[in-house]
Image (cartoon, rainbow, N blue to C red):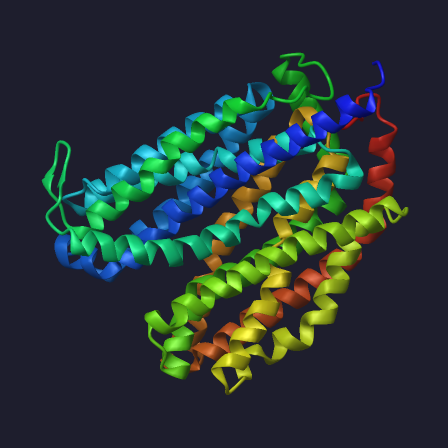
Length: 446
């Protein structure tokens, strides 16, 4: 391959960062579409006559199950087909499904629409991380992935902030007619409004090229299965420890996302109008921390620390553990919020490190499906098991809703300790795996 001129290399790098910007916007949009329904629970319950169990099904359970399940075949598709088209198809599905929520007149209609939202959003992450991995050299990879990943927190903040504005506008325009619907309730107007931008943003995927993969595609499914099996067999200790550590952090993160608002209401007496803006600020600060952490890891890696991703993550957990341990025992709401913000420095970035490590150790033809498998486990354990563990401890162990903070403390502190131990044990396997991959004939980046 001919060496690029400095001008060509600079143009290519700008194009790669534009790609990250487009993927960032799509990830923000996905979080807005995902979370805004949670802000509309009261009017939806009233209009559709839903129970709390049905509400939980449409806000989290159905989404989590189909997001996890569809991530596996869509990860496979991202390994074999043009990744921009895989993502674009997912964007169209989730945007139209979000808008379809606004046309729902029954629980069953809303449930089906949310199932398709989860299935559509499952297309984004495996393909996006594979695109980034093929576009950036190792010394910039964590910075690029952390920039992309911070979109999750920006999306959460946007959902809390702009979601409130959209709800206020829709309420002021109650009875506005929707095409093929007629006069609509405010929550229905909001769902159509937040779904529409995805159809436009999806077109930005075609403003950058799909980067050339590091090796030619053989199209041999049996060969790819053999590569996957060989890689998993040779690296099972590392993969198991990474999966254990990151799943523990996913349980911590989803448990807090699900229960911290209720904890603030029960423990400090704040209402959503008070804690909503505060949590938005926390999300923005934790998003900025992702880029800072990515910059540090890239610098350590460039200086020769080949296991910097998991080593630094272990250092981060150890340094911030006193804050995590104290968080749910703080008696002042502002102290708690500050601790919660710091705790997110640990619970938010695990996918950044997983994707970066996978880009350095996994064969490129199976990278997206391996990331999809990790996402499958994260989603089921984190969103499925984590919040349920907190609820079970509160109800069956502490026997009081006022003990929610104690339940959260058990899950979050325990999860952080498991993750720390897993990452420290994984260090003995990471550097050799990176060295083995760097010697492989198809090992190249962007």
